[in-house]
View 1 (tube, helix red, strand yellow):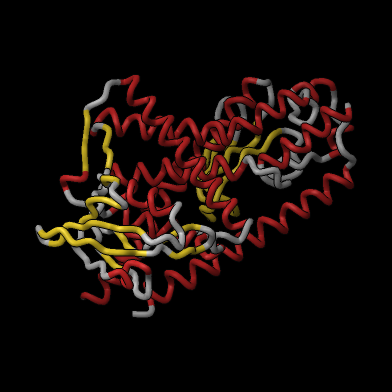
View 2 (cartoon, rainbow, N blue to C red):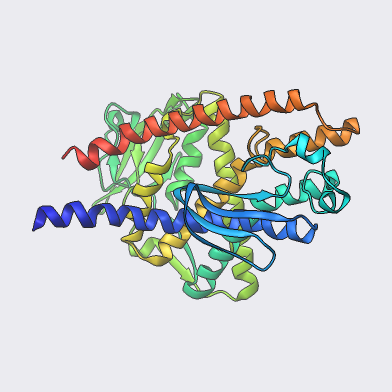
Length: 376
């Protein structure tokens, strides 16, 4: 019975949270495209959550087919005049359209209208994140965590180990400057590579002075201590009103955006490892872990994922929304669209980039998770 339970229930505990988070994010992304397209007078043929064969669906009064498809790794909105789900126009069909058909064709809309439809998807992702985070703050309060300058772990062969740091030490001051948080300690250390620091720590009620010389790792000064255990005293929850909740949602969404951009820049400049990239398996594993902490935490994960997907879709890579916006910008500057051949080459390059990223992310996922999850 235990074996049956593990085989049946364990996969569901990963799949269901994953489907909830990803479907919510994809739905709002495509809803952004859909609503602005309708507002601009574009006929929408298909609104799909997922790719591949249709599982179930229905037609609305405007003739749009709303459906859920078999492969739940994204979604699309197909407009009248599109050749495929990537909104690549069918030039031959577009040229043969009647005036009535051209009036509702995405391909024949002004470049500004097409750009508005495309950018609406990522903007809907950002809006979803703000709504989720603001709603959580309004209901549960604004939660801030200020880790104390307590050492929970000393990294082997680090400057901290050489200086004599021990788990449980609480940093009081560095070179005479009082330290009140772990972040404050990191800030002081970050500008002191290869410079010996006099660090006073509280060790079980006794003040001890240590002499540590931070080393450098990927261009950053590091001491080699970690703070991994958050105590109740380090968590502060404040009740907030509607306006403060919205402010909090915007601030947190911007923090996710800036953090994501910083991470991507670090990978591109080889300061960060590409092994941190993850794909569907990583999302499933994290969704499972977060779901065990409660529905609110799962919503926060959806906000994080929504922001990241919205941002990545704005990258100027053909096949993504940012690639379409790049083509529209060129069209606006030239006064006419790029040739079919140029757009075709662009989409092939974009597809190659996306495939490479997917393969890399999947490889990372397999290395990190699959052996750990199913190899024991």
